[in-house]
Image 1 (cartoon, rainbow, N blue to C red):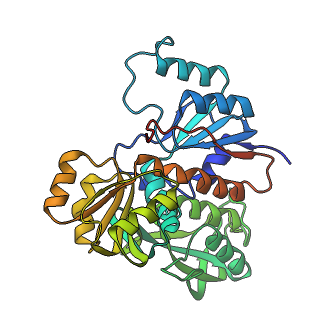
Image 2 (cartoon, rainbow, N blue to C red):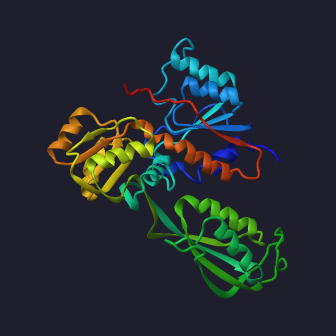
Image 3 (spheres, one colour):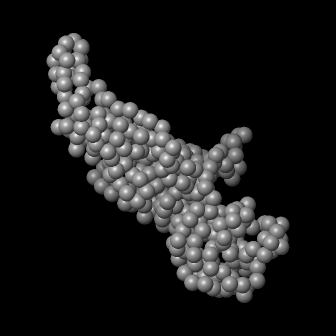
Length: 370
């Protein structure tokens, strides 16, 4: 087996966390190095610190996929005697590329927030706040009857024809097509200067806007004609909504203090910070990895009894307490759950290649409980 290239690794990873669902101005994508190379090993990390870089060097990695940006603000200089400069220089010296998936991985199905919700045992999941709504297009393709099934299957494989919980959706109408090849044409059917009449099928289906070009290329590849006839129409239907955070029902009704213990156990924490009466009963929880203080109003509107998140500041906590809304600050580091989740996804996505996926064992949590 051969190694996957960096471009292949990221192409398959972005099927999990497409870049277009990230929040505006988020620092995502390739931030350092090149993807135009074979990838022997990928290290999956929450942050890219010097410890993570040393680990990547030690295991012989060519690529780090991380959640938090290594370059968050525009660089004013690259001084290699500064901590950040030393880190960049070390990664460049060892030809280790760094790719970031942040809010797109938060919003993705199977991403950070779904992994957190699964660990807590939340059910009946909904989105805390919608950040991206994908539009649908109507794709109509005209194909000779002899190649109808071949083109139809290629369309479905490219992501065409998915409506809610149903896949392979299409409408197929038989008819007669006419065309006259020119002297310079190389027709699959017909002769130059002769009007041809062919039994064809018009295939109609829906495709997410982000997959239109992929679908067209799949059709052209599977279609026998030199010139493929197809139409694309805008439609008002929505394909899918992506959101930051989740809202769901807890495994059982419990007191806030019991939920705090449940959170500690689920995420392997020594302690959490709690706002609210520990004896109050909670049943529905909002959950958001990272800093979720500004989403308290969204959690209240969603009917949640408590918001579980990280990095709650003092005044936000005061406001929540005054409003009678419970908070559990589990810390930003709970997002480390993405390491195992992303690694498991990549191992499956890279089946058939020699590329290995390694979960970073370095702790990048700057806090310690004492």
